[in-house]
Image (cartoon, rainbow, N blue to C red; front, side, top):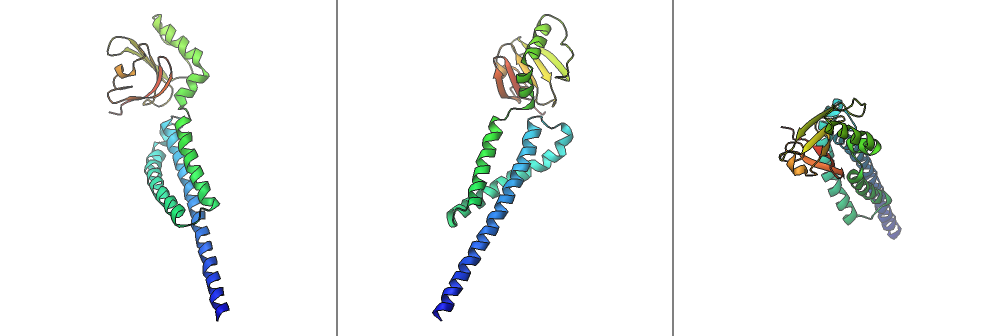
Amino acid sequence: MVDSYVNTNEQVSIDKDAAFARRDSRLLKVTALWVFLGAICGARLGDWLSSDFDCAFYLAAPAWAILFVALGIALIRRSIRGRMSHRVALCWLILFLSLFASKILPSNPAWLFRQHREEFIAAVEQIKAGAPAPESQLYRSTWEYTDWFGDMVVEFRTGDFYLPLVYIASNKPEWVYDTCANGGFPVEKLETCWYVCKRDWN
C-alpha cells in the first residue's frame, strides 16, 4: 500500500516535470518567433528592407507587440510558480539581448554615412558652392532647402523617403520642421550637423 502510494507520487512528479518541460519548449519556440518578427520590424524601420516589405511589416508589428506582452507574462508566471529551467533562463537571455541589440544597431542611412562619410561631406560642400549634388549610388536624390531660421539643410534619400540622412548647418534639428521636428523627429545623431530623421507621415 505504502509502495503504491510512493510510486503514485513519483509518477505525478515525473508527469509534472514532463509538463513543465513541454511548456518551456513551447516558450522557447515562441521566443524564437518573437525574435524573427522583431528582426523584420527592425529591418524595415531601419530601412534595411525596402517598402516592398511594408505588407510584411504591418503584419509583423502588431504580432510582435502581442507576443511581447504574452511572452513577458508567461515567463514571469513560469519563473515565479515553477523552477527556473535552462530553457526559461535562455528565453529571458534572448529577450534582453534582442531588446539591447535593437537599441544599438544602426539604421541603413547611418551605416552608409559611416562607411562613406567623406563622399557625403563632399556632396554638401559642392552644394554650398552653388553646384548641384553629384550623382552617386549612395543616394537616390537630394533635397536642399533652409530651416526655419534660414540655415542650409540637405536631405539625402538613401532609401526610404521617410528616413532620410540629413545635414543641418545650424545643428538644430528642432528647426527642421516636418522632417526632424513638428511631426518628424531625429532618430540618430551621427555627428555634429548630421542626423537620421523620421519624417512626418502626414
